[in-house]
Amino acid sequence: MSDAARRKQAAAEAALGFLTDDTIIGVGTGSTVNFFIDALAGRRDRVRGAVSSSEASTARLRAAGIEVLDLNQTGDLELYVDGADEADRHGRLIKGGGGALTREKIVAAASRRFVCIVDDTKVVDVLGRFPLPVEVIPMARSYVARQLLKLGGQPVLREAFITDNGNPILDVHGLRILDPPALEAAINGIAGVVTVGLFAQRAADIVLVGEADGVRRLK
Ligand code: 5RP
Image (cartoon, rainbow, N blue to C red; front, side, top):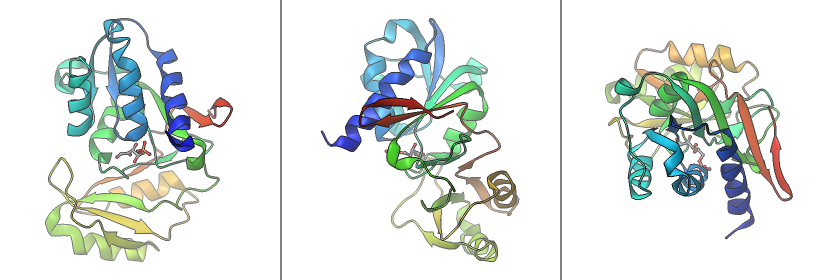
C-alpha cells in the first residue's frame, strides 16, 4: 500500500471513534471512505444500517453485510462520514472528484455531525487548487459554463462521465476561493446547476487528517 493510502486508512479508522451504538450512519464516497466501510464491516453489529451517497458505496456496504437504507425512511442521521478533495482549517471543503457531490451534499445536510476524513495532501489555506466540480442539468451545460467564466473560473466538461443522477459535471479550474459561502451561493443561484461541490454553508464539523505519524484533528 502507498504512503498516501496508509494515511487515508488511518483517518478512516479514526472516524470509527465517532460511532454511537445502534444508529444509522451516513456514508460518503471515494477511496478514503472505502477504507472506512472496510473498517465498519468489523463493527457492523453496532450500526442499524447506513444511508449511502452513491451506487459504488452502496455496493461496497452491502458486500460488507451492512444494510443500506433510504434517507426518506430514516429521518435525520447522527453521523455522516465522508472524504474530500480539499479541506481548509474551517472544515470547508471541495468535494465531487468522484462525482457523488449531490447525494453527498444531501446526506451531509441531513446529518447532525459531519466527520470528514482526508490525508494531509488535501489540506489547504485557500480552496481552489483542486478544480471545483459542478453537476449540471444536461441542457444547461453551455449556459452554466458561460456563467462560471463570468465568475472567474475556467470550466471543463468532465469527459465520458455521467453522475448517478444522469447529469454531466463541469470541473472549474483557476479559482482562488476567498469567500467559500458566497461563491457557493452564487453558483447555486445559476439556473441549471444541480449542485456545486463547495461545502461551506454546511461545512464539516470535524476534519480528521491522516499524517505520516498519526491522525490530527483539524477542527
Ligand atoms: C466523491 C468525493 C470524495 O470524497 C473525494 O473525491 C475524495 O476522494 P478520495 O477519498 O478517493 O480521495 O467527494 O464525490
